[in-house]
Image (tube, rainbow, N blue to C red):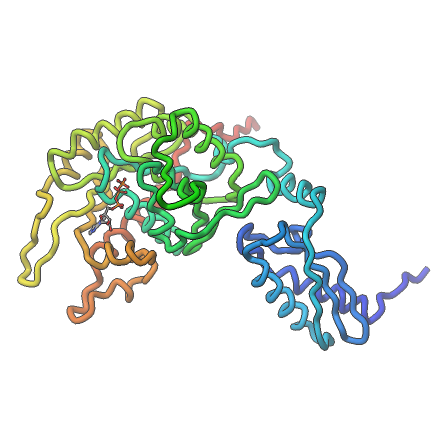
Length: 386
Ligand SMILES: Nc1ncnc2c1ncn2[C@@H]1O[C@H](COP(=O)(O)OP(=O)(O)OP(=O)(O)O)[C@@H](O)[C@H]1O
């Protein structure tokens, strides 16, 4: 028996589907063919017609997906021109997609102790010590090393992460019950700030249970996909969010950011101790705003010295980095371009030819954290008895 051979046009249609497998949805970060976003593909006399189903109407990535679909189909030899019919998924198709993305599991935290993702919460005793700046740079530096990184900005009092990453106007896309986090510098980012109506409306007035539900929702309904590292920028101090995160992510590792001021060590130590009480493991301390090198070679210790060492000593953990005061670091934050995104050349201080010491220290911090591997505490290990 001979099987019917595909016609030339059927072969072209298959080749187009294959080429479309290279188009990645920028928010979900999977090939559009895997997401059932491609419907019929037809070729007649070299004219290709591709049905593209967007996840939602008004999808912010629509233009780019349509263009990439056209380009991919047009790249197939034998295709003369391409028409892309853009439509939107039906509610049933969207439901199937969200189920698939959840891996068939019911709505539950994606970051249970058994997940393969390292969860690192960044905390500080008080505000303004540069916790968000350190977190944003750490996330971008880890992503630049090829790790898959997610970042939750849970700092209700000063959700500064979107601005630090240059996405202050980004709004997450909703696909059914799933929320797709905006991506900046390869970091999937979600922030409480993306859910308040205007910059002047703040979430500060939110009460504990509402904050708890929001953090819980971030962990269940935001589609992060497979991550190597999830960073959380906590509000300063030991308030409701820190406690909720402690309850929801008891296996998280904790990084404490403090300044060199010895007097700040008390509150920094306290934030580490509260994290510890919920079962989390403090992995180290970062001293930020350390001495500023002067042109004459001296170091200006604007905020004193010793706070990082003191905090690390009292928490019995290593001081992982000392990040100096840096105009370039502050400016990078102001324009939404983290200093580590510039790479070693970008942190170049110009005339002196020396890389910016804050950028170097943050890169080294990322290096050190990546090399620590993930904690296996609280995780059930595979056991084989034979
Ligand atoms: N090493 C540094 N050198 C110079 N400026 C810095 C440094 N670290 C942070 N800053 C600046 O200090 C200010 C406060 O930083 P940031 O918002 O990161 O602090 P924070 O601890 O997250 O504050 P909060 O928790 O209160 O929101 C910002 O303007 C930031 O650019």
